Image 1 (tube, rainbow, N blue to C red):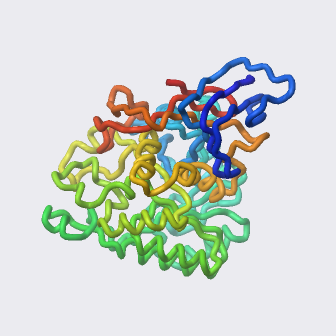
Image 2: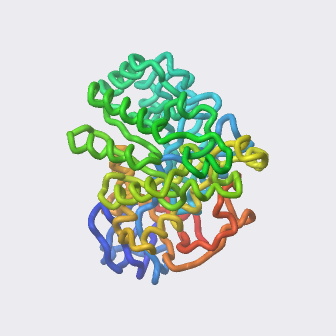
Image 3: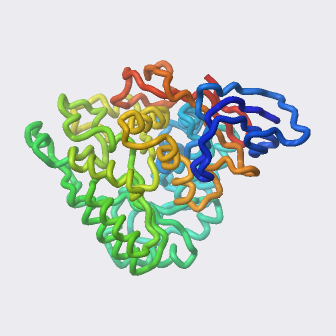
Length: 424
């Protein structure tokens, strides 16, 4: 299909493009920017006047819950939520049932996504079999079946020798390893950040050391093995600083942060609202300030949603008895735009963290509007205000503290491989 997207502000951070012009799509690819290709006849036109046209967003952590946990979400519902939020590609952890430690499960997820024709879903494979931290998973076979990276999620690999052997194997085959650093012993029994707020509320706390100790251990083993490593959903300023220092020493490491950790703090837990029960927990104001500073300084290469849908019953209990996590695919854009409204970042820099930044981490030729690249496109109105409601939410989960809030910035169109998959 030939599509002309006219009059929008085209922002492509990968190519330093920021201009008002027309964009042409043909055969599922970006055909031209500015002037129409010779002989081009549009079959569909999209008027993007007053809107921003950019590459589709790439989310480095979004749980689709399938297979095994369809009471919480499914590939169908969560990919629909993704395209409604301008996310054209998402990476999903191996924490399904069964775990993504066999090629059959990895292929099942991808085949299901292809049948639906919504967002592209890239599964991460398990670092160890069953995420049990004992035996190496068949990483090479999983990579051949489409797994983009490998992780043990937040399940511990307590034995450092086993972890080192996993990283050595990954390094041998140039596989990306993602850490979600968390010391199991220091986290056990905790429900929020350990500080004055947790003491006042009488909730068991999770100290910063639960993250920073594991970051330090993993960085030591990364340096030992030379593996490509990514640190996902960091919550502490000191964690990010350690990763930044490692990059300066030449280690091939990167980091992302969930958008809510740049906006909220542990003080939001006042009132025992289970929507704020998250792992990693919301940290202190100093941590939030440190994460923001690292983002500006490019110490953090990507933003993600850390999308975790839950059924209502999982959140309908006393705070400590609820399951942690919040949905975020449909709010990723408006929450991220708050950083622009607050003067923290310019629009092109923000969009880099949502497009070309994640693509570079994954080693993919994506997140760009380069001529000939896949036409994965998001068109959004940065000024439109809207209210998130349960009725209009596409995710099966409704668990977010932003439900009922007025948000600014709304996706109007999403295209994947040149095909419109969402229009408002």
